[in-house]
Every structure is written in structure tokens, then in C-alpha cells.
Amino acid sequence: MSQLTGSQRFYALRVFGLRVYQSTKLHHQSSAMGYRSWLAVACFLAAMQPNSLAVANDTYTSNAKTIDRIENTTAQRDYRLDELTSATLNAIAVGHWNEGLTTATELVNEFPDFSLGHWLLAETHRVLASSGTLMQTLPNYSRSTIDILLEAQARAQLSHEGMNDSHPAQEVAFEEPLLPQEIIQSGKHVETIILVDLATSTLYHFDTRAKQPQLIRQHYISSGEGGFGKHREGDLKTPLGVYRIYGFRSDESLPDLYGAGALMLNYPNTLDRSLGRSGSGIWLHGNPRADRSRSPRSSEGCVTMANDHLLSLHKQINIERTQVILSHNVQWQRQADSIPQRDRFHELFEQYRAAWVNNNVEDLFSLYAIDALPANVQHADRGRTKKVSSIDTNSASLSPVGIALDPLSNVRAEDLSLLLNPDIQPPSQHDNSGHTQHLVMSFELPDSNNAQVTLYWEREPATGYWKIKRETIDAGGA
Image: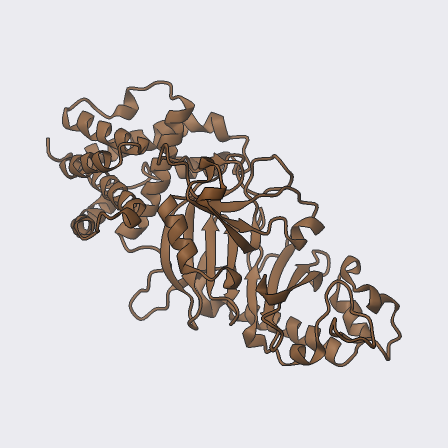
């Protein structure tokens, strides 16, 4: 039996999706993701209609040819694993079981420590032997089995996007590619934005040096066992927010749990602490070498990925000029659609800069939240209040940061990085529900050894006004 009919394929996919959903809902219905989110993830394959499979059928051959072009070198082994896994899942999705058997066999031979590969190979053997799907024969799944199937579903969703060239970031003829709504503007001091969609277990790597940010890579990741929206130490959740990388720890300095290394994030940042969030040690790191399989929800809160992905990422980015967004249920839009927000945030910056440059205490009081207003402003004479350099011996530096007035006056609105801070319930652009929003605005001070200033703005639910919740400066981009 080289190929199933459309109805047989659809039935097999329904069994796969629904069986996994039934087995996983009890494990996860109390998680932060909620019951309905798990239904959506678990039924991904079950939701594919026969006509959509026909479209996928036309594109499978080109994917198979892509596999043949990949060099099986040590440096590319995790990329090779991703491509073989994707090819196998795509073949199964369109009912090409013989092709699936071929790529699954190749996958297991090259990666005998990849548990998911063995599952896919067993599935193709059973279907070709007319024994039904393996998913039908197991009434009760162990936790390890559920983890493998959840990984299969997350990878299937990712490969389905690439297989049909349907990802929103892909350029369509005569149309500009879409961007995540979190990215309003990337400043000249930012060369890379790493966005992680925790709901779909996908990492997106954007090169932001051009006027239009370019998606250069996306791949599978795993995150916290407790879900996302970290609030306290030990909750096993991955935080939501905008972060910077403050260092890299090599393989030799870490236990095997962290794989080939770790990019360390500055969680909890100043905004997190102001919101009462605790915890530490949230990193982007590799996987243990003993088993290449990793459930989408399997870490203690970190974002984990294949070791070669981690090493490649570290090699390609400038840590000091990279921002990391940990989000969920990412929505995509044309860059032009973000212009109204961008213009509003430009106005906020102009008001901030003018208040300091013009020595306007009243405006400073209106721009800062009560608990963020610099102490010197609270007690200063109106005629003498100004932002000063920390090396100015004639007057004290304002708390919490000291910023030289002349470099600040030379920063342009076009130089800013403007990123919406993700939250558990992200509102739409026209949301009037009173939900608190946060904006992360950052810029580099000219002639100041690359010192970077970050303003964390908060939209007050009652008034809709934006105010500075926290303000930090990092010397030399550190």
C-alpha cells in the first residue's frame, strides 16, 4: 500500500490529533495555557482537510529535493535532524507513506538517540502493513509518550508553515512581508531581534539592520513545564517580556542539562521587579545530548533548543546589539499598520526629551509614574532641575540614571527601538478594556561609549495615558 486515499489520510490524521488531545488535556488543563489552547495545539493535524492535503502534496517533492542538498556535516547535524523530521511529517500528512518510511529510516539511522524518529518510523511501518495507526492501539499513554507526541505536533505545525510557503513573514508578490505586532520599530543600536512564540514553540530570528526587518531563520524550541507568564521563583514558567542578553556560558562551564551552552537573559529586568516578579537563571540554552527529543513544555522556565541551533545563534549575533522578545500567540501585521502606534510613541519620546532639555518640571511630573519620578526632580527648584552627566562635579546625578544633556538632545525618534512588552492577555490596538500595557523604548546615546537607555512605559488603564514606569542606563551596552 504505497499511498492512502484522501479519506483514509484524513482519518489517520484525525486519529493522531484527537488521540493526543484526549491524552494530554488531563495533564495540561490546569496550566497557564488553558484548556482551549491545548485543544488547538493537539488538533492541528486533525483540522487539516483533504483539499489542503492536496495542496501540500504538490509541494512535497521540492522539500524532498531540499533534503538531498543538505550536507551532513557535524556543524549542521541539528539542521539535518530538523529537515528529515519535517520531510517525514510532511510525507505522512499527504499520505506518501513510502516516502515517509524512507525519510524516517534515514532519520533513525543518522540519529538513533532521537525518540520521535523511532515513533515516526514505527507509525509508517504499521500503516504500510495495513495494521492501522499506532495511535489507535495505545489506550493509555505514559508521560514520556505524550511528550514525544506533543513534540511531533509542534514540529508538524512548523513544517506545515514552511511546506506551503504560508508563513506570514514570507514575502508575497507585490506585498510586503508581515511582522509580529510586538515589533513597532527597531533602533539603529539593534542588529538582531529574537522573538520566541511560546504558544507554538517557535523561535524567529530577525536581522534588523535593514529598514525592513528580515526573518532569516525559524526553528523549534521548548519552554517551561509550567507554561508561560512567570511570576515567582520555582513556578516552572517561562517569562513574558523584552530582554537583553548579558553573556554566554560555554559548554565546559555547565552541566550536561544545558547542552552546548547558554545565552543568559536579564530576567527579572527592572520592569519585572516593579511588577513583583521574581526568579532568576532564565536562559536560552541547548539540550542534553543523551536524547535529542524534547517536549514543547519540558524546561524549568528556560527556552531550550537543539545544540547546533544554539551555537549558530550565538555565532551570528552581537550580544550587545540583540533584543529578545518572549511572547505567545504572536499576531502578524504589515509594517505600515504599525505606523499610528509608532507615531504616538515618537511623540512620547519628543515630550520626554523636551522636558529635560527645556528644564520643564511640570512636564516631567506628568511623564513619570509616581513611583518612578527621579528623587532630584521631586525636590528640585524648578529653575535648576536638569538632566546631568555623572561626571559633572557641579551638580548631583539624577536617580536612577545620569544622562548627559547634549547627547540626549541629539537622539532622533527614528533612532529608537520600540517593542511592545508581551503580557498574558495582550490587548488589540483598539482595546478599551482597561488592560495595562507596557512599551519598551530604548536608544543609544551618541558619543557616550555606546551607553543604552531603556524607558519602560506603562499605559494607565483608567486614563489611557502612557507614563514612564522605570528607566535604566547600561554603560557600553553591557
